[in-house]
Image 1 (tube, helix red, strand yellow):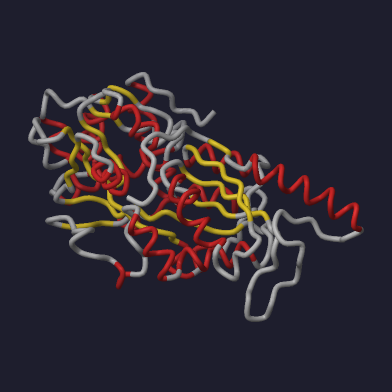
Image 2: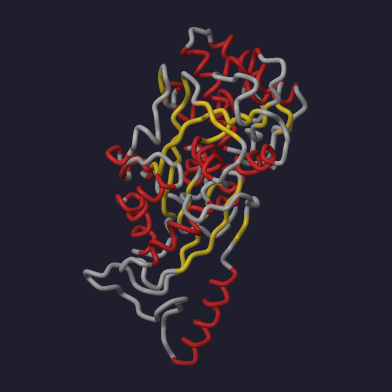
Length: 361
């Protein structure tokens, strides 16, 4: 995998160098009497064919797992384009729910990329930080897709092939993030629930299947990346995770392999610019991420492109029996209320019963 790193920390902000550069530029601009502040070239206004004005700084706030893809691949590639000339970045990545709440509380953000649609909707409902029409963007406002898969030890010693095996195998010790901080965890839970429904279970039986798997969780870290690191460091013997995380682990030589369950859910991660984002640079960056070049870079890092012609079926095979979407359950607004409401959600009640935190603190 291109320039991929194995270990990351939650909510890391990597914009210190850019911030110092920006400060120097401000001083220089002040001494010279210029009216614009920039961290790159001191021009503004952009060229009609060359795109963005130089010197804008974009703050990217996202869920935990794509951090290295942004900082090591996507952002440097954009900076080499005519639209990205002179643009610099600061970044903050962590558990999706935590990141969404931070932006709602005032954390600066130009581009937001979350794990679930409900985390994006929070920024519509709380101050209209993001346009209510974010889902009407190209590709429905989705940056990439992925699948919920099962990561196991090399050789799959437990013989895990499905979510049902996790319920029935007495030796399974599961790692999955906490659903009240992590979007990844919510996708995992809905994958288990939906798979049971697809296999013919009733809603009550599907929820019982979710409970059985949660009962086997050895740890519930705060984010998808934290969960991956916990598994890598020896906790548990089964990890529920994004397909892209599993591909990354295999390519980096970890002693693991992953299983695509017969039925699983398609993960759709939403992206948008905020209303206060520098223009046109933020929109240009978004367009780059959706371009063939940007989508190919995503694919090289294990993410399924939303540009379907770029999806290699050998690299990204379909589940054996079927792939379903969150729309099957009414979309994230309904799912959040039914399953993840902190007081009355069915999953909140299971988590509370088993002694796990159910507040978003």
